[in-house]
Each structure stands twice: as C-alpha cells, then as structure tokens.
Image 1 (cartoon, rainbow, N blue to C red):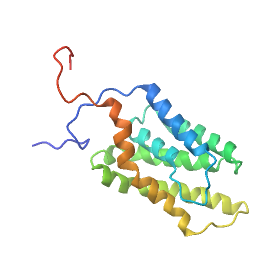
Image 2: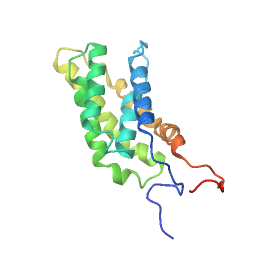
Image 3: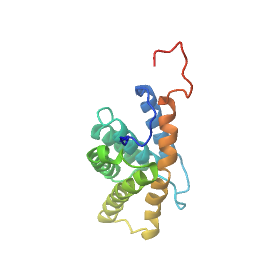
Image 4: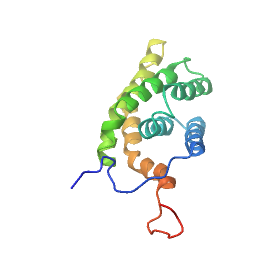
Length: 174
C-alpha cells in the first residue's frame, strides 16, 4: 500500500489566486488591529504566509513576504525592515522545507513550523534590542508556540475551499 505524501487521500481543486490574496489580506488586517499587545496574540500573518509558502511556493514567495513585512513595519512604526527581514527569512525557509513538511500530519507539521516562527520572532526582537529597545522577556516567545498551535486549524480552514465534495455527482467530470 502506497503512502500518500500529502497526509490524506482527498483530491484538491486548484487554489483560486483571489482566495490566496483574500486570506493574506485578512491576516494583514488582523495584524494591523489595535490590540493590547501585552497579551500574547498569534502572528496570523506569519502563519498564513508560511501556509501558502508550503502549499503554493511558486505563487507566494519571498517578494510577497517582504511586501507584507514592509507594510507591517510602516504600520507599527518600528525599524523599517524589521518585519520585512523576518517574514522574508521565514518564507525562504518555509519554501526550503515545503516538500518534506507535506509528508507529515498537521500536528507534526506544526512541530516543523514552530522553529521557523520562533526564529522569525527572535529576529524582530534582536533588531529592536540592537536599536535601543529593551528585551521584553522570554515569555514573549510564547507567541510562536501559540501561532504554531494554530497550524492544524489554519490548514483545515485554508484547504476547505479546495476540497471536492464527498459524494460523486454524475454531472461533474471529476
């Protein structure tokens, strides 16, 4: 019996480019919300970028990640390039491991994604500290753990439009 490299036996429809744009834009809007940042909030933009880098590496690449990172830098009035560098490196390494990650279950995929998210967050903290900011403490890195924990849910939600119906319809060619 052959093992399916994508973790399930479902056939997925091709992804709609508008759906990719809408999901990335929604994640950016969540990142731009004026939330109390003293609480741990997941970085949904990084999560959605990693998802599309793994699933569609030819459509969503390093340039898209840099543009979204630059938008976050402008909005947060942080050092320009802080998030752009972090998201660019995050996308690069997500594209690097995209074939290997697809072989695992969603929970194991989250375990592979966690170090990438942690490194991206460490880059932003390091840049802030280099430019005179104070180190917020190690509890800040819990954001990466929370973001990685949302990976199975994110995968379920973002793959839902591509899934074919359960029952075959005789009028459809597939």
